[in-house]
Length: 360
Image (cartoon, rainbow, N blue to C red; front, side, top):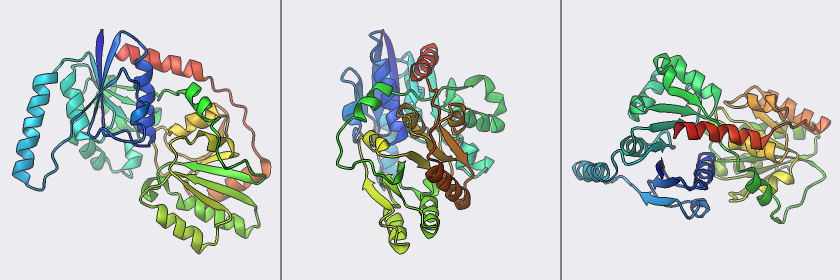
């Protein structure tokens, strides 16, 4: 029996959280693996999706404003975790890259420790090499046995800064739970497919990263051209009200709908004609994989992982500006693209599981 440990913050809705659950649930089907998931908080809409044979424990740092008290409590917590778990696992993974807690837990639990990277960090930090170095130094990345990126772009940009770590860095894409996606997509929802061409965006409302204002601005231009179509936003976040105010200001209520956060977004793919993503940066967006499984074409800005869409003939990649997004939305509406999706989900997953098992 091999003991595996994964660490993350919580299991709220998000691409990283969904990818983590897909991975550990798949691994838990192997009776030779005993899996422990360490969370900062045992909470989130996905918490009940974790298979019953996976043990979940909490490790939350003290966040007291009293500096001395905070440091003493956190030191005691670290000592207790070390005494109980140090090198007791055959494999460990810090899945929430940014988390110091996750880094400590994974590095302590196993000599076979792995740090997951979910982004192109040069892109994330606006090509500021020093900020990237500071970020990875803060999580003591050099102490991990391996660093695993979910895209080639993420790996390559990392190695531009840390070329000496070439032998420690590999690429392993996220697994796709394609059977689950197809099954959940059949769930009945009130909305029906419209005769109007419909774009869908699924994700967190965070302007700094997701730049959903680009969709709203492009929609305004298309309205001025007398185009008739719809945009559905599935998700929420700190900038939701900002986006709603933009829609009201531009009088786009008949064009753009806010559906809020959905635990099961898959039926909404099927009432749409295209997925649209306008981010400044991503890791390897889960929506790419989901759209390929459900055979929905994608219009995306040029972010990490986007080239895989073109390789599978399932979408269009554009530059990160309103004009290009506007022009390509117009092309989607006019031409009603249907891409020849040659994506083999089973082969894709088998290759990933082979890599994971080699790591373990």
